[in-house]
Image (cartoon, rainbow, N blue to C red; front, side, top):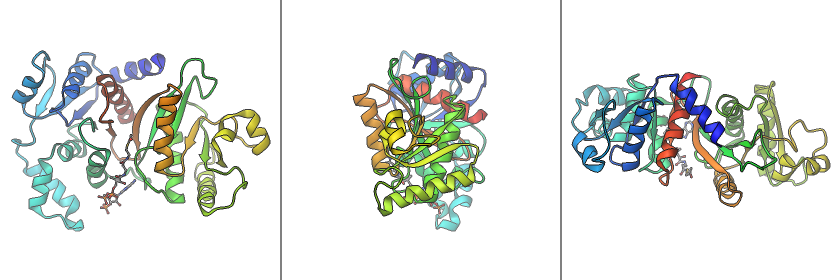
Amino acid sequence: MTTFLASIKDRAKTLNKTIVYPEGNDERVVRAAQIATQKKIARIILLGNRDAIQRLCPDVSLDGITIIDPKTENIAPYADTLYELRKDKGMDRATAEKLARDEMYFGVLLVHMGKADGMVGGAAHPTSDMLRPGLQIVKTAPGIKTVSSCFVMVLPEDSPYGQNGLLIFGDCAVNPNPTAEQLADIAIASASSAQSIAGIKEPRVALLSFSTKGSAKHELVDKVVAAVALCQSRAPNIAFDGELQFDAAVVESVAQRKAPGSPVAGRANVFIFPDLQSGNIGYKMVERLAGADAIGPICQGFNKPLNDLSRGCSIEDIINVTAITVMQVAR
Ligand code: ACO
């Protein structure tokens, strides 16, 4: 845990990127802004009213933090940009102006317009409030159709699983009911995050199900099998396999019985859940029952890095996600 997070923060310090925190009305965010600035993890743009921020945290020095208040800022350039992006979807200019003053939209507009490199938000908003402006404004990276998410699961030190105790779980936060195509997008993006964020050089990606290699017949299983075929044709240099039950994916002796010869079974380090119910439940179970640290959700597939925080996040969580966001800018 310490090694993984320390190395991410060390790398972030060398990159000198600018990250916007939209929620200047949240004490944890203001304190994280001070720490990220002082430790040089990123340059921070904090959104909100300067006096209100200082009243919220009188002991925090705002030196070195850029503060912008969307409520008083000249909003025209931001509203114009939003209007141009969304007018074909029925947004009128007045709505664009109102939305541009919303801190989540304003933050994403700063990133889209190149005034910040990335955004970390969601300490005081539900996930959908963070994702929707991202999907509408920043959109997906070229060649990518699906925004998704993954967690880096950091297992307790004595765990025999994963690479140095690190596993990747996707998608646990964005797509409620992915199609086979979207599942393949999630799997390929999660393999890439495993490499670039967790330093897992050889991702072995298990597409999970309640069936292993035809042990059950169901349309839900067919979807996973179709996603595996898409992954194998689109990213032939990465090991994908499925459909696999979780035990077959992770336990060597079970893999030998249920999926002999699989390049992934028994040794998987990236786990793709078939839908958001299983993914969200699954990561929280491993976090709570196995004592793992869940780092994320880390968003994948946006054209610029935007990351969501849990509303239960700590100041340390905000710093960690900031460091990951800086790394996503750089890749
Ligand atoms: N990838 C790419 N584009 C997408 C995606 C996606 N995953 N989802 C929606 N879009 C597109 C839509 O097609 C739409 O495009 P357009 O308007 O330009 O044509 C645009 O993004 C905006 O979509 P909306 O219709 O406004 O949003 P939607 O209602 O589809 O909601 C959202 C998207 C917010 C991601 C929704 O799926 C959601 O709420 N997901 C679950 C989030 C959540 O609650 N997670 C669990 C908690 S997180 C945790 O516990 C860590």
